Amino acid sequence: MKAINVYQDTPVGSKGKMQFRMALSERDARGIDGPALFLSRARAKENLRELSAALPGVALHYAVKSNDHPALLQMINDEGHAFDVCSALEIEHCKTAGATTSDLLHTHPIKSHSEIQQALAAGIRTFVIDNSDEIGKFLSFRDETSEPIKLIVRYRALGSAELAKIVQCNLSFKFGCAPHQIRGLVAEIIEAGFEFGGLAFHVGSQCLSPEPYLTGINIASDIITELDAEGIATPLLDIGGGFPVEYLDPIPPIAEFCKPIRSALESLIPDYVRLVCEPGRYISASAVTALVNIIGRSVRDGVTWYYVDDGVYGSFSGRIYDHCSYRALTDKNSTWIPSALAGPTCDSVDVIYDNILLPPLDIGDTLVFPAMGAYCAVSASGFNSLKQAEIVVID
Image 1 (cartoon, helix red, strand yellow):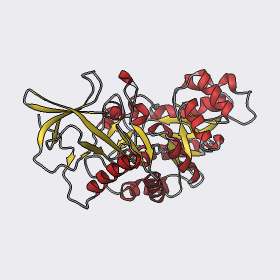
Image 2 (tube, rainbow, N blue to C red):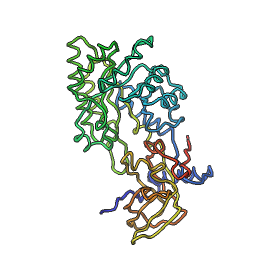
Image 3 (cartoon, helix red, strand yellow):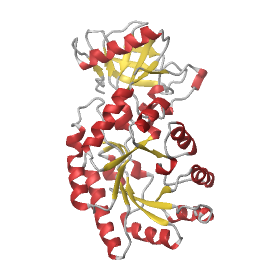
């Protein structure tokens, strides 16, 4: 099997070398002993502004699940953006950051009775559903709020098999009704005494093509026209998240990626429909750089294994849950050889890469991994009671 080349041998002055030196400088200045995640609010703010410029007229509701660090949420709130939440604790995080809870979108299609109760008590009135049973869960709360409950219908933009070829994480595999079910659900919402809150789709996470968004927008356009003919206005269209970031392979600038999406929204969706999106990865991923240390080395069956002080039970949980490959940076400049990179726990599952090209490394050397701000720290655990990476806000 061909080894994965995630090592970047970069010349002095390049972006990669600068990222490596920044991480070492921050570690040394702060006296950090162990793995670390360096969070740059300035980079996250830059990402917010780039996406806002690429999708003018589309409100950004940051997906808290991608990275819920308080400093990040505070910055996003201060920038005037809202949030996409999926649990009671995420709601509390947003409240702590100063968010207005009535502006939050609760986008989890499946909710327990207690989650609905807590969300309503916090002031949330807009929720996403994708089936009849979910509508029924709200019946017991219908007369308990002075403000109407708004239910948004989430649908699948493409079939699961089609999306699996385009996205890193296919969210339509688990959520979203079929397009032909939308009108029936809208009728059920209105008959149950709730407000029809609009339409939503989510193509998945790390989508490498704008095409699924265009399909979702075309479906919305047809449904909005049909509902208009019945005298039912569609107040909102949520196009989800999934905007891609650069890991190993280059991606187009976000303005270029979003250009056909922007065009489709302008030409197909009526002006009265409020447009929103749910970016998570695009905002948080490149805002965090990880630093790990080589704590062990072994030659096994002719392959050099390096053991580091963070792994898949920690910050590299995204290797499993997010199906993501992260680029490794080092100041070593030598011949690349097939190697293995493993985490610090005593579990053999804790292998970050089992076939990676790396230069020869020594115990005590450091590796730096850019773009580890999305779905990394949030899914890390304390397995083996090992120290988790320290999160350091650098600006």
